[in-house]
Image 1 (tube, rainbow, N blue to C red):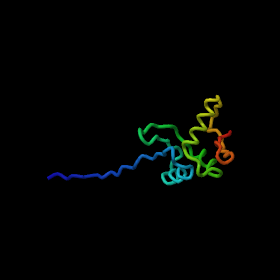
Image 2 (cartoon, helix red, strand yellow):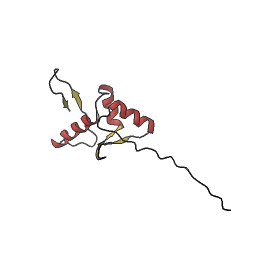
Image 3 (cartoon, helix red, strand yellow):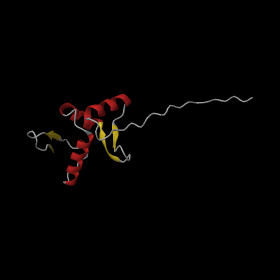
Image 4 (cartoon, rainbow, N blue to C red):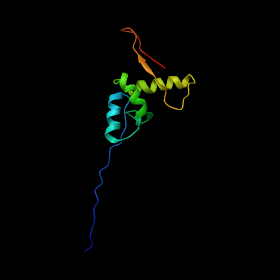
Amino acid sequence: MTNRIETQVEAMPDIILYPRDTVMRALEVMHRYGVHLLPVVEERHGEVLGHVTLEELRRLGNTLPLARMTEILTARAALASEGIAAARPPRVAFVPEGQGSRSTWVH
């Protein structure tokens, strides 16, 4: 008779964020899993839309804890389309305008 060793491996679920996730939620996930970078993934097709860093989220978390990942990625894309390049993620701020009007991101 041979000895059989069975190993159970618990698969860790992919650690990802969705566009609807907030800065606060992203910081919680990063803290829980000890990571400093997370992808933002489109829910239906699993397409990677971008990524966010712990440094970037800590900056935004102080003033915009409820900003969503989609807003952060959109602001970053707008800055990139204007030809603004930086070695680290841009500092952006969400500025709500009067009620009923569109809000904007500024840098």
